[in-house]
Image 1 (spheres, helix red, strand yellow):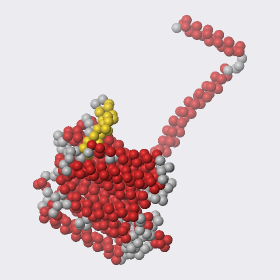
Image 2 (cartoon, rainbow, N blue to C red; image 1 turned 60 degrees about the vertical axis):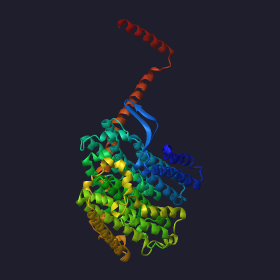
Image 3 (tube, one colour; image 1 turned 90 degrees about the vertical axis):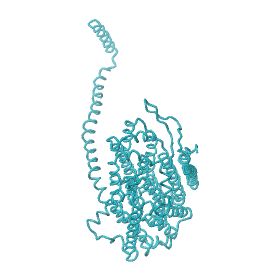
Image 4 (tube, one colour; image 1 turned 135 degrees about the horizontal axis):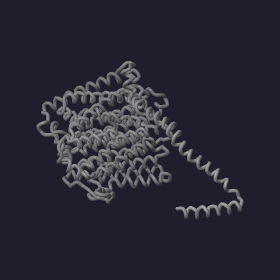
Length: 631
């Protein structure tokens, strides 16, 4: 399909239409235009995916020459292989459902036209990132999604806290992007090209562990930690929940934050040549998964719980990448897009029903009034907890199996993170939907199920969250892991040798242990929050330093504020007082004073006396003649 380059063009055209006409286009029309543009991209993506699934060739197109300087000849070109086609399906499919949902969720917002223009600009940037054939075009999309994230987090810009959250996300992402940029420069210095096929082909001839590969991959991973919210650059994502809920579902759960995972998977050949970087990725992912999951246990904002859950699940994806399970990480990326987008949209339905309330301590007993929202939220919760036969079970089990093959001790900690996930998600479910309503009477009276335009995407995502795992059904459970076979050409250089695969008996044992402990954890959450009806104010741990440590998110923001922000502000204040005022201002003002004083002296010569002027003219002529004679 040679017209595949139109896939990012549809959202771009919609952005231009809704962006330029946001003051004149009817409110009801902007959402329809934006959704249809994404639908067209999805349909084209389906055609591309089907062609590659049936054995078609990798698609590539060179649109035009962009940069020519010396030996550098860079074109704006797109390339879609098996990995790219899967990402296109996820981005456009989930993106379309969220756009449709947004029509209902944002219908009363005065900035709805501006909202959809931003959303379409994001879709364009994300699609450019996925379809890029070289690092420079990928970086354009990479920066584009960062810009859109900033615009959408601060969408309700009249609230100062939202603007601060947007700036925080933008600045932290720029830190990671600097690493990505330096990594690209080193790639060009090493391989003489930015084109993926050229770089990967040349890299495949290098030896494992070469210092230059370690440097390149570590720099690229720094970029991934910023975009995908990993330690230490993860603190922006919880604050990003200041944006509208559809933004949280699309950008900060299903697509943009997975860009780092996609980038590492795309560059798997480079990363597999650096075992040190792979270890760094694995341990960073594990630490992030555990840290975020432990913080989520004590969050009382429904969106903050899901935000830390997203960080934790991204940690699992990086853990999978770090142990060489590239297919497992992409599989979990795909299933996570389904159930996490569903969780955010269902949370948005709850918030919508309660007139903006987000505190789970003021909810409860909503399963009767929000029947569809409750059922779909329940499906997504079972999926993220890894209960078979829902999608999260298959993708998480594949990662855990590869982790066990790599290091059984790391598997124990990864399993602990999975149990924490099950606990805090069912804590959230029971506190929101079971028991009695704990809000005020106005909220209880206002509570109602959302309209069809919002619940229909929930139901479709629930089906995907339930059955999406069949894409990667392993041979252990009677399948043939079609996803692994489909992605095999992309990860052929990085596939693990068959001799390292664990036995079937061990795999069944791991599944049994994981499932038994997960069900026990769910039962414990039910006993505490549904049977005993313990409220968040007194749950789990008594008020103590340890509990405050979890509630205050391990004081990481305070640490950054003390270590980085305050010194920077103090230093800038001193620079202002000394360098700006006493040196630069004094120098500029001094030059100005010299000019003024010189002018005041010279203007005394302007007497208005004609005789004096003639005398000075004659004296000047005599002086010029004298100088000519002596020189």
